[in-house]
Length: 207
Image 1 (spheres, one colour):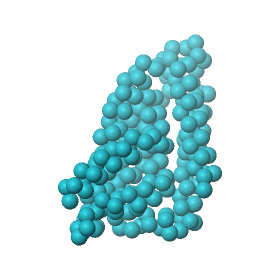
Image 2 (cartoon, one colour):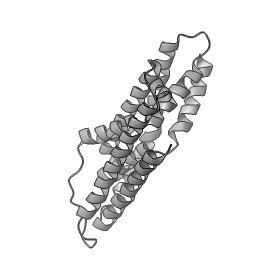
Image 3 (cartoon, helix red, strand yellow):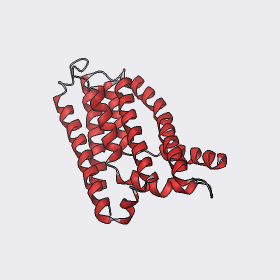
Image 4 (cartoon, one colour):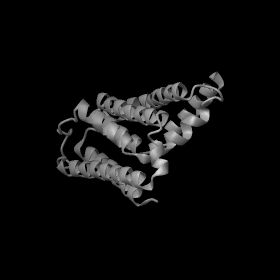
């Protein structure tokens, strides 16, 4: 069992390092609104990771592999969420004052809203469900009780993901403290908005 756990930890770290929609959302919140807001987004994302892990443990996410309709529904919903977030970011960029002004005076996002953004971004990503149902069972040792092992791996997966994002949020918050002028804030929102819209369109159009 310990051999499987060590192998899973290494694989989970590698998977966590691959950037995706959650990474963009987390970095945006940390850069624009600070570390606390970034951490709230991370906690929401990890709850989503844990939910997909639990779904894999109970066989619910297997529906994504068995049903093209179920996969497409979640895929289109996830694409709509990403496009909506990206559009809001682009709109926020327009609301930031002229580039010759000083620090931005926009209202910060609440911790609750940041948490829900992280959660929804992860839950609405069908790739996370397919990954969970195809990835986690590979590490269950032969003869081990399947359900407890999958639940344990789901928890480890969420913890590993959290450990990876902690230094990223810290660095993003550190950089974000420097990016306070209106012109820089506008540009950051434009970049993050374009990335989110692009990810949403890509998710909607892929097979």
